[in-house]
Length: 339
Image (cartoon, rainbow, N blue to C red; front, side, top):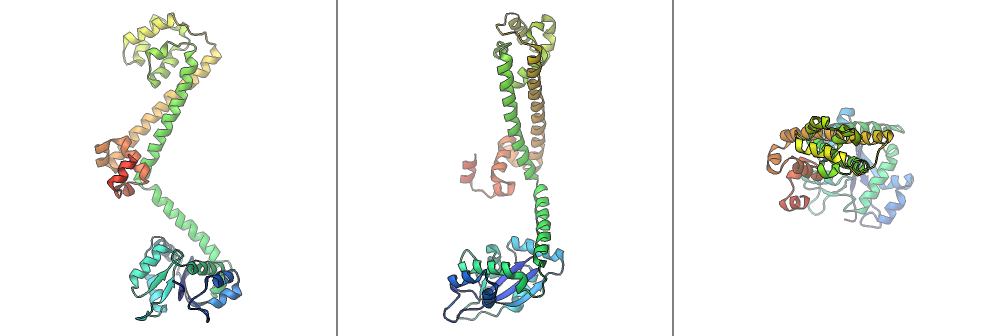
């Protein structure tokens, strides 16, 4: 499309409709002429003519309209503005309206079948004209004072963002995404701390890792044993309690400590190692709490998906998709790739 007849400017203070004045030596506006005139108010003012400015009747109406614009919906207020101020399209030629929002342009065409809409995606001229309107709006809209649009835009931006954030936070699937990411982070932290504990304490009691391989159990045993020299048969029941009442394995640990080839350890070194072991136990407990929370949350939000593939995989699918709603719209081929 080489020209536009009108341009719609959706400002924070209201809707403005401008007629785009065509050049006498061209069928429509030339792109080069438009780009050269955008930054010059004197030149740009000759290219556009204000047809109507319909201010919002308060911040509530303004926020309602800006939400509808962002969702690509024509409000009743905008519909009345266009009906009252746009001429009817002829049989041979349609009136062409430039619109900044692509989705809104499609909605306007749905409301006004005889109207043709262009956006910056379909016409370079539209992008330049809209840019000029935004740049000089406070002077082209004569009823406004300097700074009115900036102040209204700032307040509108805060209100719009606040509403979007509140909406996002209240989504239950967002809690699932965060919980799943937290569990991954906790698993990584537990593994890193355990590697340090195993490597460090292994110099003192290398035989222990051959008897006990579970990370959490190993860390608890490090805290219970401390210096291997202090380990005696009297500690059998204490070790067995940590090992799930496995007396044979507890006795094996005591026997291994008596003939261990490990180095002696200083009290200061043991204190640091014990600190890492405590961190492993604490993070493992936190991970267990988060996992139980995720299990319960999935039962409320997506019980069918949970029953079908289990909590961890279901939570990861929702996390990869971004939301449960988005996941439900994916075809089978996309789900296969995500899996």
